[in-house]
Structures are given as structure tokens and as C-alpha cells.
Image (tube, rainbow, N blue to C red):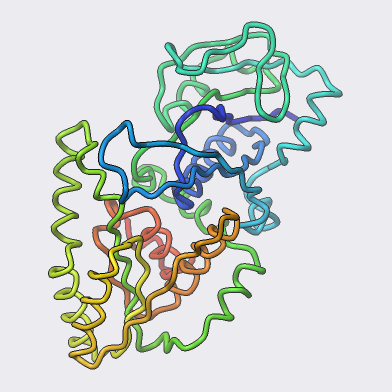
Length: 346
């Protein structure tokens, strides 16, 4: 058996986004399946932070990094049906007992250098025989590995500091495999049961609204013109006036009397204004509360339950198209469409 271990050093910048981790996992599964390798199932990493409080790059203070066991989130048995996987702990037990021929693949000029004797991780060290530098981004690593005979003899491949950036639009090129993988990633039964405890929503007469605000306040940090235009456009689309108009149009067209709001907006004044506007039209606003728990797993559980609850609503409203919406909103939309209808998006 041969293994593929995607490792991101704990000292580099992380993201707190749940769905960014989920889409990153999809890429890892895709690469592992195509290489016929056993995937070392990564822990999810999170850096709790509030984007809406950030005004410049040097304010991106990371107080701590938390790791979440994926088995606390998704149905592992369902994932095993499409991909050979092994936990990090199981993997390191094997590494300690067997001498596997190992190659570490890194990028030139990495921020986190490779130790010349052993590959160091927060889980332990791994002896390796070769370190090969390759310039790659995201899924390009698959092409590099498939086209190189020099990797065939290695039983253990470590991808150093793998990090997916941007929205996952590879479904356009690898349509069938994308949806096979996406439909295998389902939240576990305990999270589904927990979300079912949330009462008071008539799902057949409720509009799910995902109001993404905090991230777009980072627009002044964008370093590319395309990104700046993207932030500018969605800032306009998601301001209170435009959002309320879009909600009212949908509600009046379909005679909807209830709105379920998922948002990272923290401005209480704007939230109250939205509630007042909808009340004037006899529309009930249900605001799903964010968890203030210091325990980050509980925070993520709250986030996931919001996805599960929101995906049950018959009517949906997002701040963007499928390709360019937030990854949280996109995950909800894919859950909402379900296994039979998800592929229509392509």
C-alpha cells in the first residue's frame, strides 16, 4: 500500500473557513484517486479571526491555530466507498514500524524550509530519501506526479504546504469525478440530528438568504485588479439596500412569509434595519445566531448546522453566481440540490 500525505506546516497562515477546508479535502481526494494512493485524511485547521475587524495586512493577527478531526464532521464510512483513506494517527504508526521509500515535494523558495535529515510535522518526524522541488499551484500537482516516472517507486509521497486558493471551479473539467466526490462528503449523523432540533421554520415557505459581509471588508487588501473588482461588485450587491430589495422581490413573487438569514454581518444596526424592512411587508426574519463559544469545534458545529438547516429551505438567495459566490454559500446550494440535481449547475 502506498500513501499520499498533504501536510501544511502549522506556522504558515491558515484560514478559519469551514468550506474552504471541505473543498480542499475534495482536491486531495481527487488527486489520491487518480494516483491510486491511500489518502492520509487531514485534520482541518482553523485560525479564529474576525475579517470585519481587519483594515490592513499587518492586522491579520493569528492568536492560535486549532485542529479539528474530520471524523467529527463527516461520514467517514461514506467517504471510504470512493477513496482509500487512513487517519493521521494510523499513518504515523505505520511510518514508525515500516521503512517506506519517501519523497517530499515542495515548491522553490518555500516560506517553511525542509529539514535535510527528517521531515518534521506537528505529529512527528518522517525519514525521507528525496526532496524534489516543483512549481505548482493547486491541482497542477496531479499533472506533475502523473507525468513523472521518477515518482513511481516511492511508497510514500508528502506534499509540503499544499494550499488550494480561490473557488473550486475544476468541476468544469472533471465533471463526473467532481460530483462523485462532492456527493460522498456528507455531514455525520450527530450533526444532522443536532440541526433537526432547530424548530420553528416552515421550510416550504421560507427563503434562505446567505448575506456575506465580513469577507468583502477585506477588499482593500486585494493585490490584483480582478480581485478588487470582484470585491467591489459584491460589496455593492450585498449592501443593505440592494439585499433588502432582492429579498422583497423574491418574497413577493413567490408569496414567501419567512426569511432564514445566515450571515457574518456583525453590525446590529444593519441587522435591525433589515428586520424592520421585512416586518413592514409582513415577512418574518429568522436570524441564525453565531456561536460565541471559545471551543472552536462548537463554533464549527454551529456553522455546519446552519448549512444543514439552510439547505432545507425551498427558496434560496445568494450573493453571487455559482462560480463566484462564497464557498459557504456554494456548499449550501450543493446540499440543497442534492445528489440527483447537483450536476445541472455545470
